[in-house]
Image (cartoon, rainbow, N blue to C red; front, side, top):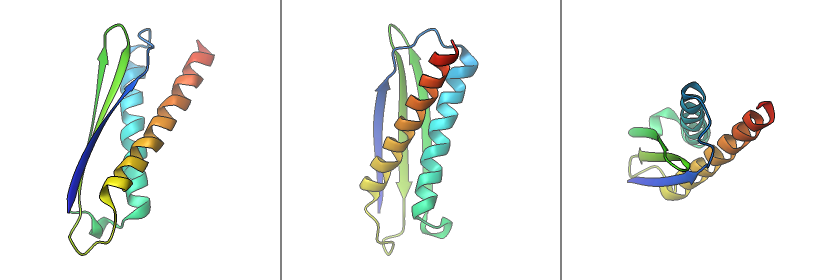
Length: 104
């Protein structure tokens, strides 16, 4: 069984520096991978890919793509798991942005 999902978060903070933007993408990836492996063991995952892209126009958009493939015998709702991981990533990015805004 495999599944994928994409979520775009409209951030709206174009004044962030490149290093901070990279940190946001890395934070989102880390949170997603940690959440998936909190639920599944490494042997339950055939393939996982987390991609983040940051687009900076009038707003700042963080695009996250998650692809997760598990063997058919693994009883897990892959779509729900990905959605939960994306939600946790969103919360972490939001918390980080609030911290950055407080510093600035």
